[in-house]
Amino acid sequence: MACTKYLHISSIHHPNHFPLFKTKFSTILNLNLNLNFPRRIVENKAPTVYNSIISHETWTSTDRPIRRSDIKRLIDQTDENFLRTGKFGRYGGIFVPETLVISLNKLADEFQLTLYDPKFQAELAIALRDFVGRETPLYFARGLTDHYKNSNGQGPDIYLKREDLNHTGAHKINNAIAQVMLAKRIGRKNVVAATGAGQHGVATAAACAKLSLDCTIFMGNVDIERQSSNVLQMKLFGAQVKPVEGTFKDATSEAIRTWVEDLDNSYYLAGTAVGPHPCPAMVREFQSVIGKETRKQALEKWGGKPDVIVACVGTGSNALGIFHEFVRDKDVRLIGVEAAGTGIDGAKHSATLARGEVGVYHGAMSYLLQDDEGQIISPHSIAYSLLCRIEGIVPALEAAHALAYLDKLCPTLPDGSKVVVNCSGRGDKDVATVFQYEQEQQPQ
Ligand SMILES: Cc1ncc(COP(=O)(O)O)c(C=O)c1O
Image 1 (cartoon, rainbow, N blue to C red):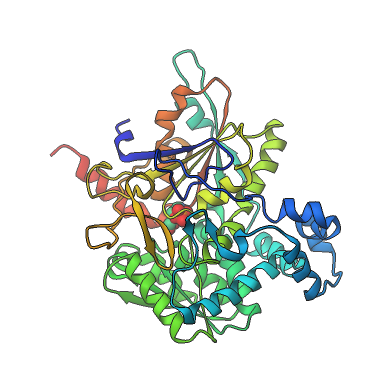
Image 2: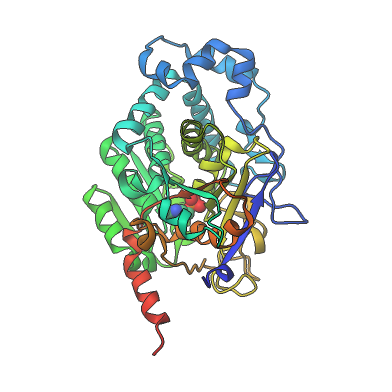
């Protein structure tokens, strides 16, 4: 297939390598923090509380009250600097006006409390099961597996983590429902969010409807046109959809501006690993359910771990969600695929890690695509559909980027190795775009 030129790959093998940042020497990210929080810390120091937080059974069966002061003490005992500062080495952090810092610090405190609060965790577990529809299957993709066999009939076994089967059609709901619950817990009345492709907007609007919070979604005018079915869904859920001149980054600026105007009542709900601390930390934590389930399901299905996990990297949330659980497993290769559009040497791509530069974007330091004025160049992705024909599954265009990398990856893998691709969402929203693209590719 002629897809490989559209992809850029970041391959991560080392436990301290992380998909959001890159070293001077490569596109691989370097991160010096304890990526297993809160498990390792709490496990070492307070096994009883650890059990009530981590074990699903205990979440849903205990009403044992736990005092706020105990939770706070537990947090203070930890040596986890990250959750206090949000710093990943030189990256992340909080780059916002002083007035916002107080609010963000309060939010960071509340977020930490929810991590240790069995009642919140029990409610979240029930919402994930009964509202979101978790757990999502780890699906053996027989068609893809056969497709990628070599002439000797050998090749890897390919599995899909079916985040497309979540309520509202993508992984975004895992984070949205948890953060809306948090917003409600801290007494906020309305939630503001920005969305690009619309999946985060739909997920946030659905979660707000469920929890009776007002919801305002900002969206670039081009995206509104392109993703009209998602816009209609948001409206059906009772959200206000506000058009913004420009794209996702402009919509995000507008959402943050709106939030800042009424910090006491409104809650800015970040849909991805972007923004000042604690936004990326929350997204990572609430998406990590994907990887936790994957580990358990792999053990059930073949009695081991995946050899390779592949995820698309847009702004990082689905990749973080599936990678985070495995970052310490040296024997699991983690591969993040960025959209390289018409090639990463040109301007029409989304390869932030491969071609981005360090800068401050929406309150945090990260890798960005910038032009000379320091503005963000609109990401431009081209993808294609393969899964529809081979598996009867319509993937989101974003997920199709990860799938496209199988072309390159599969011939390099030993027979029978286990590959998991995160199918981050379903592609109903993209059908017209793919159709038009395929028409344009037809010879005249
Ligand atoms: C289905 C799906 N997958 C992936 C992404 C990329 O975002 P992220 O990198 O945060 O997972 C999006 C963004 O909207 C999406 O809708």
